[in-house]
Length: 342
Image 1 (tube, one colour):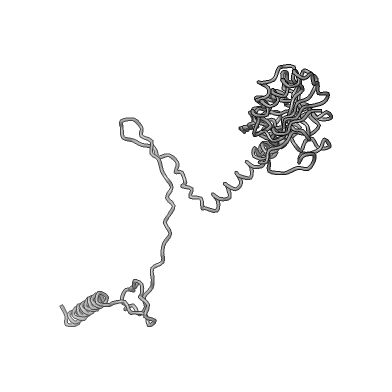
Image 2 (image 1 turned 120 degrees about the vertical axis):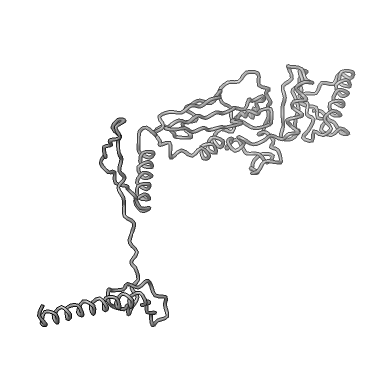
């Protein structure tokens, strides 16, 4: 081998050694390099080092959104272990705005159906417990036929029925879908007929004044020249004879309570008097009855001494029979110490 060939080999070997040394130095420098802090004092993110260079600035990593993976299904083929991959189904993840929009649309559709669909229109309703009232009377107040069930307010309907029909002791309204309304009522039973001459009032056992409707047999009749005296517990005072409404507004008394003392005295007189004795009530002399012997008897408006007044009257009748006196108009024992007759 010549001298020139040996020199060329030595230079090539030296060149390879220098290149290997440079590569080793670069790798060592890269391992020793650290991220440079930012001049603003903020905490720097992770550094990205380029091969052969020191990082002079820190580069923050960008947050990568999660990938939407399509759900895949595999169907096994018998016991051989082979499977068939079915088409992937994309996973749908709707946002809150989309869900809210769908719910709003459904609510609007439901309200429209309730408000305008014939399915929710009240064609008729049931009224249970009517005796003297009729279905037509109730419908004339409620105007329920042909209306939508969503427009029906049971509370207001109950108030309207109470105002129109004081003879209803209780009212229960049940509403069902699509258009069902059931009204259960209990009517008061009148026991007394207050005959004013130009106006007749009915009164139940609790003293509630009722309008006369239909026909009821066996009512106790009271003839009077005034309307029934009212209890002091009535909320709204009314004007007229003895604090009562006049015959021009008979409906003002409907639903109000009669004086409890007068009502109790009437019930007591019924059991003491003969069937031929009709009860009377005078605006001047008070409560009394028609004696079968031809005159009227009055025990007054103050009925606290009711038993004593009856005893005094029996003594007066004995005196009439002994002396042959026959009153032409009336006998008053309103004042026990000063009875009189006409």
